[in-house]
Length: 60
Image 1 (cartoon, one colour):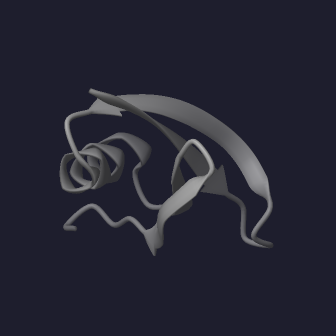
Image 2 (tube, rainbow, N blue to C red; image 1 turned 30 degrees about the vertical axis):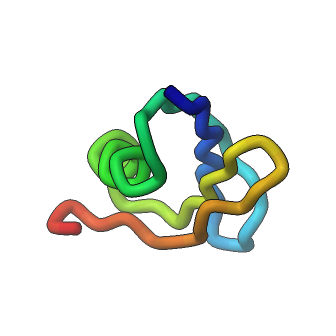
C-alpha cells in the first residue's frame, strides 16, 4: 500500500486543502480521489513523485 497526498487547488492554482489516500497503485488512488474531492482541480503526489494533475468531475 502506498500513501498518496492529494492537494485540492483553488481557482488560482494554490493549495486550498489536502487529504491522504492509501491505495495499492496510482490508478486506484486516482479513482478514489475523484470520488472523494468532488469537482476540483487536484494534484496527487507519492512522496516527491508527482502522480498527476487533473480536474475531477462528478462523472469522471
